[in-house]
Image (cartoon, rainbow, N blue to C red; front, top):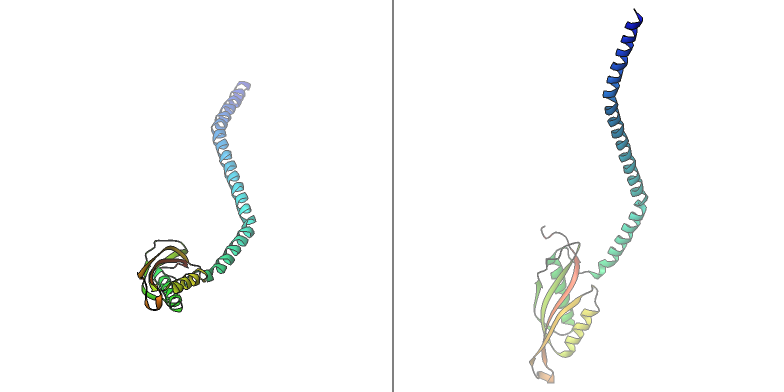
Length: 187
């Protein structure tokens, strides 16, 4: 093989090698960038998981505190897991307090409420009759009760200016509300 042939062969090999390298270098760079991006994403995910695990004990403590407060709230709520059960419990409570206060319950009915969430409102409208002493005792007993109740609306009218024994008969129209732990309305 002559020197000239040898140089032509080397030059051809260099050109061929250059062409191959020139075509593969960009794809090699792209693959390296993809690998670096995957590595960066995995490192960020690992950092996020590490931070989440570090906050797990704080989350458990927060949940424990919330559950403790929720359990402490239970005696202050009206019994029942549905709107109907809670309204029945509240009506029964109103009847008992009215009976002890010597009031006559003319009507007690549940008012619709569309509250959602784990703790829901319940309201009852009641019409009672009796004297001022009985109404005062009823309101005092309802105010200091457990479960905690609210009286968002109250109206009083005189039925008889002077009843037997010199006392007036009064009608008390009252809306009484409370809260209950709501479940599903369907059995």
